[in-house]
Image (cartoon, rainbow, N blue to C red; front, side, top):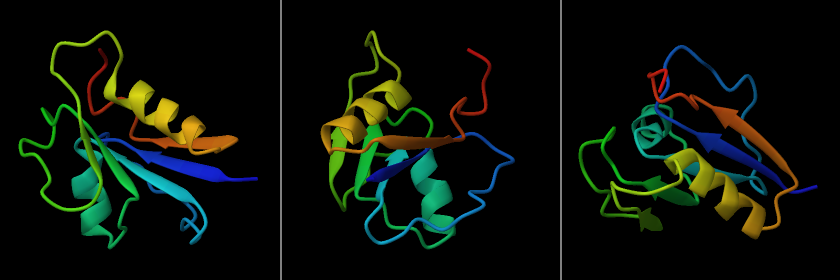
Length: 99
């Protein structure tokens, strides 16, 4: 079963496991900084980059408009499902905010 790790900008979490080579890792906006600080290279980075405060220049990046109906995490989940993932692990999903 193909597994996805969706890593957002929330704080105070750890993965508890290291993604395997065959797992699909998506950095969601500010979650890219968390990944970089731990040496994790995502397969895809998704977001409007309001949390990260810059648009990544390397890797596969899907830039979203600030004004949108879906959250960055929802778009990341949709991308993971499109990649054939059947199990999604969400980390830092609140982005550090309750809204």
